[in-house]
Image 1 (cartoon, rainbow, N blue to C red):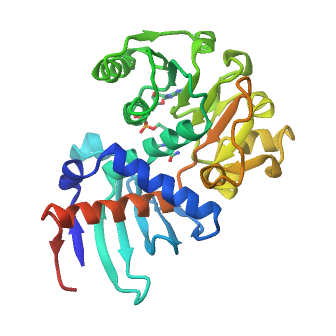
Image 2: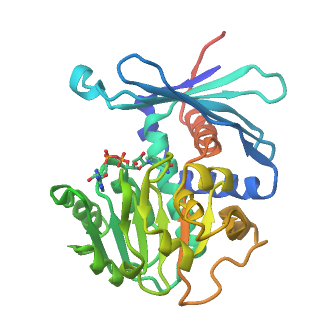
Length: 321
Ligand code: NAD
């Protein structure tokens, strides 16, 4: 078995490698070659922790495994550790033997950022100039940094529930040589692409905060009850997702479905656009929404990629089990 510890992931994995891995696995999902297993998520009654497993099998990439981990709310204050903790395990699909154990914390951030970037590549207008951020926490910086690697943006705008966190987005914009402006929510009408990545249980971005032709990557809603978008916005948009089963149950679409504004059959897997079996955006005035719920296959795809990079760079630790 090969071990790639968390401490080495930042030396090995790049946003570009994460993008390629996630784009490929979304394509495999839509082609019926890869599927996610049902998600397990348990409140374990210790340290207020939420623990679970996300797994799947990609027959195209021959990647089998799971991500184990969750959220320990007291980690930072009690132990100086980050609250989200995860480890990815890969198995040989021919024998069932464990093949790799990979630190999953940074990879989770990179694979989530890659998902919104893949959606932007395939669904945003090619002439997009202004990118808007709703949310400015840990994950928001990864989302913005990855998105700025594609396209020709001239400006970043941002809104956050806690405005004191916005300078972090300004720093990422500056890394790319772009100006940053804090705006109110109606100010998001200036954006051609919007990424939402907040921990919210009520709609933030309303239908009249969004201009025709905008692409929205909605990434913060990954649990039942969470919400970032006005259901009326989904009703007037063309909706895409990583996985339809998750979109309607734990993703942003759960609310528009419950309100009877859209139906499951209105939602398309992004992989279909990647594979060319769905046209994606068909007009410059269409609003597109990507409901990025986060699937286990994304974790396995980036873990498999980092194992190869670790072997190439002499950083994979081999152990006999
Ligand atoms: P974080 O704790 O670092 O940041 C939280 C963000 O939410 C901040 O911008 C904060 O200002 C904002 N916020 C807090 N309370 C709010 C409220 N009441 N209304 C509106 N905004 C509020 O968290 P993070 O790591 O940046 O994660 C952000 C979200 O993304 C979380 O909901 C997380 O579960 C989700 N997430 C999704 C995926 C996925 O694959 N889709 C992956 C990772 C994280």
